[in-house]
Image 1 (cartoon, helix red, strand yellow):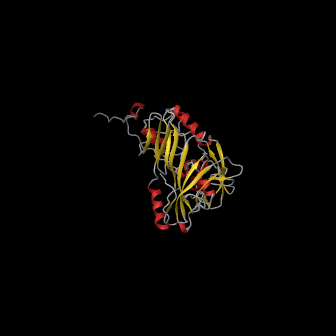
Image 2: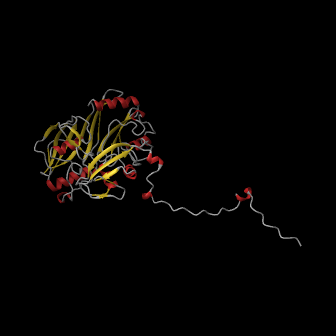
Image 3: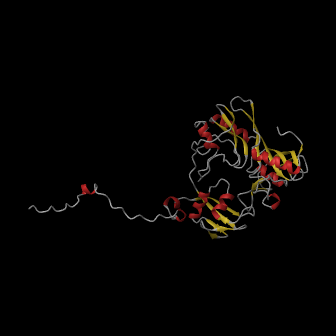
Length: 365
């Protein structure tokens, strides 16, 4: 009787054919408790230092959420990165992602440097107002960024136009801002122009810099101005204590805004046409607030969180870029592009008319 064969010891070549025993799974670290000393993060140096206070227009909340609302153009992920690096202090104490801030708290932070964002083509609804081989003008909806911002995947006008034009935006604007010759704030609706060629880009940038381009905005403002028209030439610069806001300052940069009243709604509100002759950040918003008539819905420069305004349908800053007059960069002929205000703007006009009546002073066409 033959002796039973001994089991062969697996060789190196046979081990690979045997089923592998599952290794014990390591516990996954929750995202909010990521280690703070990752090589890529530690190597990042802070490049921008900001000091601010939590204004009374915001509610108490987690520091990353509050800062994301305060810092225009700075993403929440970038703020969280600063928190992970211990670069944020609240009232002099180092904060983390769980820190809750209150109204009046002093916040200082050093924003870590990030690589320039690169825009990619994304399909989205685009309302084209004018287009040729040199430039394109669209009606930007409220809530849409003009171009990509650091540390954020939020879509923008640039994303949509890269898809619509099949990438034909002027590369002279740089990777994150191809074709961008001027910008509108996120909550502002209306006419915006982008260049499709480098020649058009440089020509249009020059027109905006030299104040050849004429911009007209419509704004629904709080209360009715005593005068029917005027010129505000108050200088503008960063607010001394709330660094994420702009303010009228004697040592600021020259800023000029012409304005006129086109409609009055009783004594409670007015439709104002504004002509900015300079291009300072938040210029129209700051100047109208300085005159005592902040734009309705502008919770940065006006106080609209009181019971009086509870029922007012103003979901955003009620500012609309109505008309833009340029010299065409190729033909040299005048080019006028305009678009009427969107539904939310007209809805507030109707509501104000029904509640307070309306008196028209000049045509809005």
